[in-house]
Image (tube, rainbow, N blue to C red; front, side):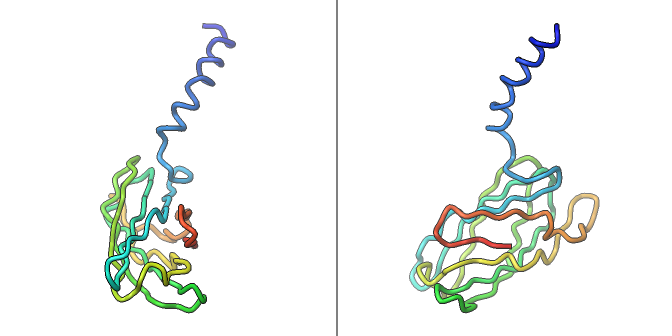
Length: 140
């Protein structure tokens, strides 16, 4: 195959690869997307979408919920593991005593525990990229 047809073939495959690619950043990145907030009485059900290139046996987040006024309203540790390699996953958890409409933003304050098959991962927070589909920001 000459160079030009090979290049054209590679370029035509790129959009298909991108469409099926894991939303994680970099070779070891973890993407977190705040997808929905669902009211449940005085509580709020949070749905997050995770994408990763590596498998994680432990991925525990320290989340801080800020009110619409910017004041800290709730702090919560959430273990999102297991996370499978090259697999998009949805993780749901409930924030008790905090209504969804009272949440102004969410901070991924730290990654409390981060382990792959190889063992503990140092500075796992640096692997995290955040985004939100909502007016409620998800920050790192």
